[in-house]
Image 1 (spheres, helix red, strand yellow):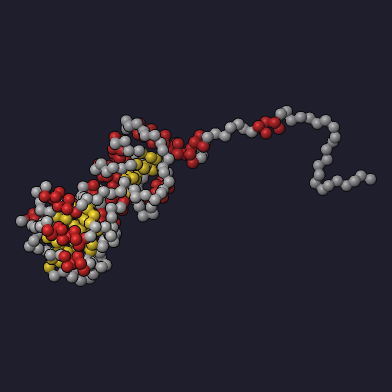
Image 2 (cartoon, rainbow, N blue to C red):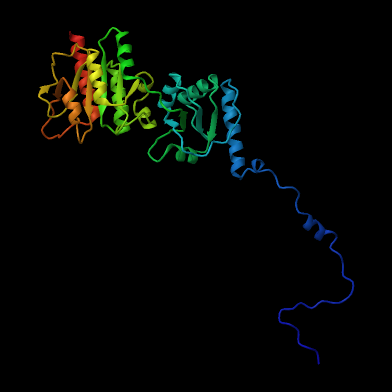
Length: 326
């Protein structure tokens, strides 16, 4: 009686069996060396290589030689800033801001601003690095709108407050400066710089402590005006205002409770530094005591206050109008 076999076991005959013709050996040998990552179209490196080739082809059509492709550096703690947005990037490049890299999103639409940014960067030997749009999103931050372009710039070099006065004396207009007291929103700083450029101010002063500085957001909000209007940093705002008073400047504070209405002020033709506080706290006590006059902007009773950027714009416009009329 035959012994029962194992369940599922396959029966085979003993003796010589036919060979496989070498198929087994070939299977062991594999399919040859694995292609490099950049030669595989589906791989991230392959996609990056293809994107770089497209960028080089686009640049070649405009008669420019492409810079060597480099992998964008990993984000690290640095004082460097990213200027984002096509208008802001082009304005910064036109002003010859000492940029260290121009980032271009893959498959970016080649409009006039992108072409100009590439052209300026190439002439100035600024590295042009193409990155995937998701990487540029990460580099720019959640609140930035980069439009496919970002410019890496070193830390902002602040002027000295008294240098702004010397710069103003070299013009045909009396000095007109703006100082910020406790303003922490970079968009307000950018808007103030933009208004300063529009109405002929000679510079903006920010305190070293408890105040906003020249960040990428401020650069962007200024719409390029930051390349023309210098920003100075004061170690102590009250002492700086006292030093400006010794230089002959009239310190004009903006406050909703000021006792002097802004329209038609009699001292518009004098050298002036306008001081504005934060929307919530307004001017600090020491700064208020330092002011030669505290003026208010008449507004509707339905509105509690104006933010710093709008208040400065109104004051600069009024002073510019009075100076032009005088």
